[in-house]
Image 1: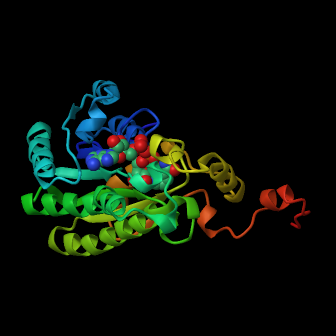
Image 2: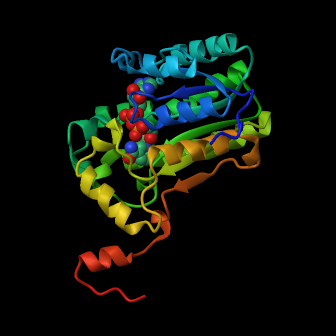
Length: 274
Ligand SMILES: NC(=O)c1ccc[n+]([C@@H]2O[C@H](COP(=O)([O-])OP(=O)(O)OC[C@H]3O[C@@H](n4cnc5c(N)ncnc54)[C@H](O)[C@@H]3O)[C@@H](O)[C@H]2O)c1
Protein backbone atom coordinates (compact mmCIF):
# COMPACT_ATOMS: atom_id res chain seq x y z
CA UNK A 1 0.00 0.00 0.00
CA UNK A 2 1.38 3.42 -0.96
CA UNK A 3 0.81 6.69 0.94
CA UNK A 4 2.37 9.23 -1.47
CA UNK A 5 4.90 9.99 1.27
CA UNK A 6 7.55 11.11 -1.24
CA UNK A 7 5.31 12.81 -3.78
CA UNK A 8 7.28 15.55 -5.56
CA UNK A 9 10.58 14.60 -3.92
CA UNK A 10 13.81 14.07 -5.87
CA UNK A 11 16.42 11.59 -4.77
CA UNK A 12 19.69 9.77 -5.39
CA UNK A 13 19.80 6.04 -4.58
CA UNK A 14 23.18 4.28 -4.50
CA UNK A 15 24.00 0.60 -4.13
CA UNK A 16 21.33 -1.31 -6.08
CA UNK A 17 23.33 -4.26 -7.43
CA UNK A 18 20.60 -6.86 -7.92
CA UNK A 19 17.06 -7.55 -6.73
CA UNK A 20 18.32 -8.69 -3.32
CA UNK A 21 20.05 -5.38 -2.60
CA UNK A 22 18.48 -3.27 0.12
CA UNK A 23 18.84 -0.26 -2.22
CA UNK A 24 16.85 -2.09 -4.90
CA UNK A 25 13.89 -2.38 -2.52
CA UNK A 26 14.29 1.26 -1.47
CA UNK A 27 14.11 2.32 -5.14
CA UNK A 28 10.95 0.26 -5.70
CA UNK A 29 9.29 1.74 -2.60
CA UNK A 30 10.42 5.31 -3.37
CA UNK A 31 8.88 4.93 -6.83
CA UNK A 32 5.63 3.62 -5.32
CA UNK A 33 5.59 6.58 -2.92
CA UNK A 34 5.78 9.12 -5.76
CA UNK A 35 9.48 10.10 -5.79
CA UNK A 36 11.64 10.64 -8.85
CA UNK A 37 15.28 9.69 -8.50
CA UNK A 38 18.58 8.82 -10.11
CA UNK A 39 20.20 5.42 -9.54
CA UNK A 40 23.94 5.20 -9.07
CA UNK A 41 26.54 2.51 -8.52
CA UNK A 42 30.24 1.90 -9.11
CA UNK A 43 31.02 1.67 -12.85
CA UNK A 44 32.15 -1.94 -12.34
CA UNK A 45 28.74 -2.90 -10.91
CA UNK A 46 27.03 -1.58 -14.06
CA UNK A 47 28.60 -4.29 -16.14
CA UNK A 48 26.30 -6.81 -14.56
CA UNK A 49 23.46 -4.98 -16.28
CA UNK A 50 20.86 -5.77 -13.60
CA UNK A 51 20.43 -2.11 -12.63
CA UNK A 52 18.97 -1.36 -16.09
CA UNK A 53 15.91 -3.45 -15.20
CA UNK A 54 15.38 -1.39 -12.06
CA UNK A 55 15.83 1.87 -13.98
CA UNK A 56 13.21 0.78 -16.48
CA UNK A 57 10.79 -0.32 -13.77
CA UNK A 58 11.13 2.95 -11.82
CA UNK A 59 11.48 5.36 -14.78
CA UNK A 60 14.88 6.46 -13.58
CA UNK A 61 18.20 7.28 -15.15
CA UNK A 62 21.51 5.81 -14.06
CA UNK A 63 24.66 7.81 -13.36
CA UNK A 64 27.72 5.64 -12.71
CA UNK A 65 29.89 6.93 -9.85
CA UNK A 66 32.68 5.44 -7.80
CA UNK A 67 31.75 6.73 -4.35
CA UNK A 68 35.43 7.26 -3.50
CA UNK A 69 35.91 9.75 -6.36
CA UNK A 70 35.14 13.43 -5.75
CA UNK A 71 34.96 13.99 -9.52
CA UNK A 72 32.41 11.20 -9.96
CA UNK A 73 30.35 12.46 -7.02
CA UNK A 74 30.44 16.04 -8.31
CA UNK A 75 29.17 14.78 -11.66
CA UNK A 76 26.52 12.70 -9.87
CA UNK A 77 25.06 15.60 -7.88
CA UNK A 78 25.32 18.07 -10.79
CA UNK A 79 23.72 15.80 -13.39
CA UNK A 80 21.06 14.49 -10.99
CA UNK A 81 19.78 18.03 -10.43
CA UNK A 82 19.67 18.60 -14.19
CA UNK A 83 17.83 15.34 -14.85
CA UNK A 84 15.37 15.70 -11.96
CA UNK A 85 14.80 19.43 -12.48
CA UNK A 86 15.90 20.81 -9.12
CA UNK A 87 17.67 20.25 -5.84
CA UNK A 88 17.74 16.83 -4.18
CA UNK A 89 15.47 15.92 -1.24
CA UNK A 90 16.85 12.52 -0.24
CA UNK A 91 19.99 10.42 -0.65
CA UNK A 92 20.52 6.75 0.16
CA UNK A 93 24.10 5.66 0.92
CA UNK A 94 23.93 1.86 0.57
CA UNK A 95 27.58 1.06 -0.06
CA UNK A 96 29.76 -1.49 1.69
CA UNK A 97 32.84 -3.47 0.74
CA UNK A 98 35.73 -5.00 2.69
CA UNK A 99 38.60 -6.67 0.83
CA UNK A 100 39.66 -8.29 4.12
CA UNK A 101 36.23 -9.96 4.36
CA UNK A 102 36.27 -10.91 0.67
CA UNK A 103 39.65 -12.57 1.09
CA UNK A 104 38.57 -14.18 4.40
CA UNK A 105 41.46 -12.59 6.32
CA UNK A 106 41.01 -12.84 10.13
CA UNK A 107 40.63 -9.51 11.98
CA UNK A 108 43.95 -9.73 13.85
CA UNK A 109 45.78 -10.32 10.56
CA UNK A 110 44.04 -7.49 8.66
CA UNK A 111 45.87 -6.21 5.60
CA UNK A 112 46.14 -2.43 6.07
CA UNK A 113 45.92 -1.52 2.38
CA UNK A 114 42.65 -3.48 2.23
CA UNK A 115 41.55 -1.89 5.51
CA UNK A 116 42.17 1.60 4.08
CA UNK A 117 40.26 0.66 0.91
CA UNK A 118 37.33 -0.53 3.01
CA UNK A 119 37.29 2.74 4.96
CA UNK A 120 37.37 4.79 1.75
CA UNK A 121 34.59 2.84 0.02
CA UNK A 122 32.29 2.16 2.98
CA UNK A 123 32.67 5.13 5.36
CA UNK A 124 34.65 8.05 3.94
CA UNK A 125 32.40 7.89 0.85
CA UNK A 126 29.56 9.21 3.04
CA UNK A 127 31.72 12.18 4.06
CA UNK A 128 32.64 12.76 0.42
CA UNK A 129 28.99 12.60 -0.73
CA UNK A 130 27.93 15.07 1.95
CA UNK A 131 30.88 17.41 1.31
CA UNK A 132 30.22 17.47 -2.45
CA UNK A 133 26.48 18.01 -1.93
CA UNK A 134 27.14 20.83 0.53
CA UNK A 135 29.68 22.53 -1.73
CA UNK A 136 27.24 22.42 -4.67
CA UNK A 137 24.33 23.33 -2.36
CA UNK A 138 22.58 20.39 -4.01
CA UNK A 139 20.23 19.32 -1.19
CA UNK A 140 17.01 21.15 -0.27
CA UNK A 141 16.32 22.35 3.29
CA UNK A 142 14.90 19.47 5.37
CA UNK A 143 16.45 17.04 2.90
CA UNK A 144 17.33 13.63 4.34
CA UNK A 145 20.44 11.48 3.91
CA UNK A 146 20.36 7.87 5.15
CA UNK A 147 23.32 5.46 5.28
CA UNK A 148 23.02 1.77 6.12
CA UNK A 149 25.04 0.27 8.93
CA UNK A 150 25.30 -2.76 11.21
CA UNK A 151 25.39 -3.28 14.98
CA UNK A 152 28.98 -4.58 14.90
CA UNK A 153 29.78 -0.86 15.29
CA UNK A 154 28.64 -1.12 18.94
CA UNK A 155 29.16 -4.80 19.86
CA UNK A 156 31.66 -7.40 18.79
CA UNK A 157 30.81 -9.79 15.97
CA UNK A 158 34.15 -11.49 15.24
CA UNK A 159 33.41 -12.49 11.62
CA UNK A 160 32.53 -8.89 10.69
CA UNK A 161 36.29 -8.09 11.03
CA UNK A 162 37.36 -4.62 9.82
CA UNK A 163 33.83 -3.67 8.75
CA UNK A 164 32.96 -3.31 12.46
CA UNK A 165 35.44 -0.45 12.81
CA UNK A 166 34.45 0.96 9.43
CA UNK A 167 30.75 1.05 10.37
CA UNK A 168 31.66 2.80 13.65
CA UNK A 169 33.34 5.48 11.52
CA UNK A 170 30.34 5.68 9.17
CA UNK A 171 27.99 6.27 12.11
CA UNK A 172 30.33 8.90 13.53
CA UNK A 173 30.44 10.73 10.18
CA UNK A 174 26.62 10.78 10.13
CA UNK A 175 26.64 12.47 13.55
CA UNK A 176 29.48 14.88 12.83
CA UNK A 177 28.38 15.93 9.35
CA UNK A 178 24.75 15.89 10.48
CA UNK A 179 25.60 18.63 12.96
CA UNK A 180 27.27 20.88 10.39
CA UNK A 181 24.76 20.25 7.59
CA UNK A 182 21.84 20.68 9.98
CA UNK A 183 23.13 24.01 11.20
CA UNK A 184 24.00 25.30 7.74
CA UNK A 185 21.09 24.00 5.65
CA UNK A 186 18.70 22.00 7.85
CA UNK A 187 19.76 18.82 6.07
CA UNK A 188 19.31 15.64 8.14
CA UNK A 189 21.77 12.75 8.28
CA UNK A 190 21.02 9.39 9.94
CA UNK A 191 22.20 5.79 9.86
CA UNK A 192 19.89 2.77 9.90
CA UNK A 193 21.34 -0.29 11.65
CA UNK A 194 19.77 -3.19 9.80
CA UNK A 195 19.31 -6.90 10.68
CA UNK A 196 21.43 -9.46 8.81
CA UNK A 197 19.96 -9.54 5.30
CA UNK A 198 20.53 -12.04 2.48
CA UNK A 199 22.26 -9.82 -0.10
CA UNK A 200 25.57 -10.06 -2.00
CA UNK A 201 27.39 -8.01 0.67
CA UNK A 202 25.67 -9.87 3.54
CA UNK A 203 26.18 -13.43 2.40
CA UNK A 204 29.87 -12.69 1.65
CA UNK A 205 30.50 -12.68 5.40
CA UNK A 206 31.87 -15.91 6.90
CA UNK A 207 29.22 -17.94 8.74
CA UNK A 208 26.45 -15.58 7.56
CA UNK A 209 23.76 -18.32 7.40
CA UNK A 210 24.25 -19.41 11.02
CA UNK A 211 24.44 -15.86 12.21
CA UNK A 212 21.28 -14.94 10.32
CA UNK A 213 19.42 -17.81 12.05
CA UNK A 214 20.85 -16.88 15.45
CA UNK A 215 19.76 -13.24 15.13
CA UNK A 216 16.34 -14.42 13.98
CA UNK A 217 16.03 -16.61 17.08
CA UNK A 218 17.03 -13.75 19.42
CA UNK A 219 14.91 -10.91 17.98
CA UNK A 220 11.33 -11.03 19.34
CA UNK A 221 10.03 -9.83 15.96
CA UNK A 222 12.57 -11.87 13.96
CA UNK A 223 15.01 -10.37 11.45
CA UNK A 224 13.89 -7.34 9.47
CA UNK A 225 13.91 -8.03 5.72
CA UNK A 226 15.32 -5.78 2.99
CA UNK A 227 11.77 -4.74 2.18
CA UNK A 228 11.11 -3.80 5.82
CA UNK A 229 14.32 -1.77 5.76
CA UNK A 230 13.18 0.00 2.59
CA UNK A 231 9.90 0.97 4.26
CA UNK A 232 11.80 2.42 7.20
CA UNK A 233 14.10 4.40 4.90
CA UNK A 234 11.05 5.86 3.14
CA UNK A 235 9.73 7.19 6.46
CA UNK A 236 13.13 8.80 7.08
CA UNK A 237 13.06 10.46 3.66
CA UNK A 238 9.55 11.75 4.32
CA UNK A 239 8.58 14.96 6.11
CA UNK A 240 7.01 12.90 8.92
CA UNK A 241 10.47 12.45 10.48
CA UNK A 242 11.64 15.99 9.86
CA UNK A 243 13.22 16.54 13.28
CA UNK A 244 15.21 13.29 13.31
CA UNK A 245 18.89 13.78 12.61
CA UNK A 246 22.37 12.58 13.74
CA UNK A 247 20.87 9.28 14.96
CA UNK A 248 21.86 5.68 14.60
CA UNK A 249 18.47 3.95 14.36
CA UNK A 250 18.22 0.22 15.02
CA UNK A 251 15.99 -1.63 12.60
CA UNK A 252 16.40 -5.18 13.79
CA UNK A 253 13.18 -6.61 15.24
CA UNK A 254 14.42 -5.86 18.79
CA UNK A 255 17.67 -7.84 18.50
CA UNK A 256 19.94 -5.07 19.79
CA UNK A 257 18.15 -4.79 23.14
CA UNK A 258 17.39 -8.48 23.79
CA UNK A 259 19.74 -10.26 26.20
CA UNK A 260 18.51 -13.81 25.79
CA UNK A 261 15.50 -15.39 24.11
CA UNK A 262 13.42 -18.45 24.94
CA UNK A 263 14.16 -19.92 21.52
CA UNK A 264 17.93 -19.81 22.07
CA UNK A 265 17.65 -21.16 25.64
CA UNK A 266 15.53 -24.06 24.44
CA UNK A 267 17.99 -24.83 21.64
CA UNK A 268 20.63 -25.25 24.40
CA UNK A 269 18.36 -27.76 26.16
CA UNK A 270 17.42 -25.30 28.92
CA UNK A 271 13.74 -25.03 29.78
CA UNK A 272 13.11 -21.29 29.55
CA UNK A 273 10.94 -19.80 32.26
CA UNK A 274 8.24 -17.33 31.30
N1 LIG B 1 23.19 -7.43 4.13
C1 LIG B 1 23.30 -7.25 5.41
O1 LIG B 1 23.27 -8.18 6.24
C2 LIG B 1 23.45 -5.83 5.95
C3 LIG B 1 23.16 -5.56 7.30
C4 LIG B 1 23.35 -4.27 7.77
C5 LIG B 1 23.80 -3.27 6.91
N2 LIG B 1 24.08 -3.56 5.61
C6 LIG B 1 24.60 -2.49 4.74
O2 LIG B 1 23.68 -2.22 3.70
C7 LIG B 1 24.39 -1.59 2.63
C8 LIG B 1 23.98 -2.24 1.31
O3 LIG B 1 24.42 -3.56 1.24
P1 LIG B 1 23.51 -4.79 0.74
O4 LIG B 1 23.42 -5.74 1.88
O5 LIG B 1 22.28 -4.30 0.10
O6 LIG B 1 24.49 -5.50 -0.32
P2 LIG B 1 24.79 -5.22 -1.87
O7 LIG B 1 26.03 -6.03 -2.14
O8 LIG B 1 23.60 -5.49 -2.69
O9 LIG B 1 25.15 -3.67 -1.94
C9 LIG B 1 26.44 -3.11 -1.73
C10 LIG B 1 26.63 -2.09 -2.84
O10 LIG B 1 27.84 -1.32 -2.66
C11 LIG B 1 28.24 -0.98 -3.99
N3 LIG B 1 29.63 -0.48 -4.03
C12 LIG B 1 30.76 -1.16 -3.70
N4 LIG B 1 31.84 -0.40 -3.93
C13 LIG B 1 31.38 0.80 -4.41
C14 LIG B 1 32.01 2.00 -4.83
N5 LIG B 1 33.34 2.15 -4.81
N6 LIG B 1 31.24 3.03 -5.28
C15 LIG B 1 29.89 2.91 -5.32
N7 LIG B 1 29.23 1.79 -4.92
C16 LIG B 1 29.97 0.75 -4.48
C17 LIG B 1 28.09 -2.32 -4.72
O11 LIG B 1 28.19 -2.21 -6.13
C18 LIG B 1 26.73 -2.74 -4.23
O12 LIG B 1 25.70 -2.26 -5.06
C19 LIG B 1 25.88 -1.74 2.95
O13 LIG B 1 26.35 -0.54 3.55
C20 LIG B 1 25.87 -2.85 3.98
O14 LIG B 1 27.01 -2.84 4.82
C21 LIG B 1 23.90 -4.82 5.10
